[in-house]
Length: 564
Ligand code: ATP
Ligand code: MG
Image 1 (tube, rainbow, N blue to C red):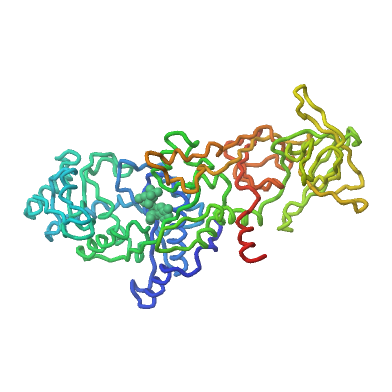
Image 2: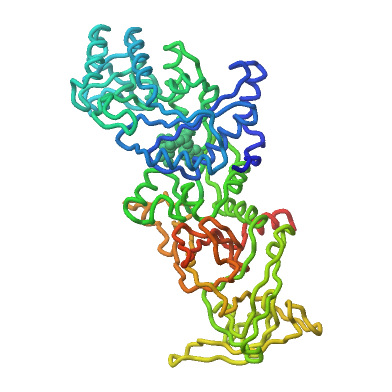
């Protein structure tokens, strides 16, 4: 596992709180955090922000982080999700202290609920959900007391035990905290702690037919684990008084809840509900579709954990929700891959070029540098022969102005190879160019000009006799709107799906150096972008994903801003 060295180190308000707490010796100077996903979907880029923050800060202060599955809602949770989360957190480069499940605390949570009943701070309520809503009041009007609020402690204990024993159907009763129906914070108006749900749980099976609500389970789970700083996203800010209330009334260890801004990204949806919909309705090929913003998806796409950690490090944390540029994330992906992956040549939309003055049966091995950014990556040889492929795009029969690549009578350099001049074209009956003719200058071997004459373009190529065939999947953003969540009245985020998000190219021609590539291998196809071998590959049929194109508009913007 790679060492997560590029986790957030810049100053942020959560870090400042931890520093102050250590100085005042609160929690004995320790830092203990947790990452608490609900196993009801795959982790996405937003979760990566939370993971980097929780694990990064704890590590910085010599503390530890638990991976806690917040599995209190049996209806939506599955083992598949647990497995993928474990896999994803590891991939991102973090090691938890303990992997735990909120469901392991069900008995303790039940006992604490009994304690609150005995303290006169919880009651069994028979109001159906609809009625309970009416009693709750509004933001401007106080609520009214439930008619069941003043049940005796004995009756409450009896009914709660019978709820647990399965005597009542789903929804018949709830256990509620007795707090303040006039509180301006609606979360404090006698919130539900337990509901009846005769549902099979992925871990506790049929042991329980009452399940704790998030607000009741979360803080107590943190408390059990001795969490010091319970970091969560801003929507829980209004829940903090309730979080505090439970641990205070129970007289147990009191972690501090701290809220930060959720990650939002342009051209991306980061809501598990919406991601689930994309999967179940078949808009993508699965949770790990390379267009998905899930960690499984971007991993398959070829993003690296290092790039993701760098991104999470620079975006920082704040107190107001905003939106980050997808381009910034791509910038860090390029920056990381640029340093470490080899360059090779691949022709995605091939057209044949026959080099008329090249001997028929000769093959030359040309020297090619693997990575100009990394001398240790060494070099390889690339075979050259009479028939090669070049990119259709690199030829124009009638070149527009400033088109410096190949056209009749024009000379270009073949990367690592020779200068060639186009001498003619072969067309089919439909008048389309199907083959090019050229001559080469043997004195230009290695791409050097023999007599100082200049060519304006260098293009990539692959020897036809040596090329290996591959499928290449080229992606665009899954959504065509910068903010896909923004939809007109009556619209749906699905309306913003980009119909061109996937282009499958077959019959692509790759340099033979790529033979034996295995899923996960990453390369740069010269001039085209970064690519990685997809899981769908078989030994005889390689499939590549385009991770990201080469053009880094973000770097240009940065340079412009710096006046370079
Ligand atoms: P969603 O809203 O996508 O369903 P969630 O918040 O319900 O996500 P959880 O599994 O409950 O997902 O989240 C686990 C942790 O990850 C929580 O602490 C949550 O605050 C955090 N988290 C979820 N989404 C984001 C995000 N977009 N940015 C930062 N943190 C996030
Ligand atoms: Mg959630």
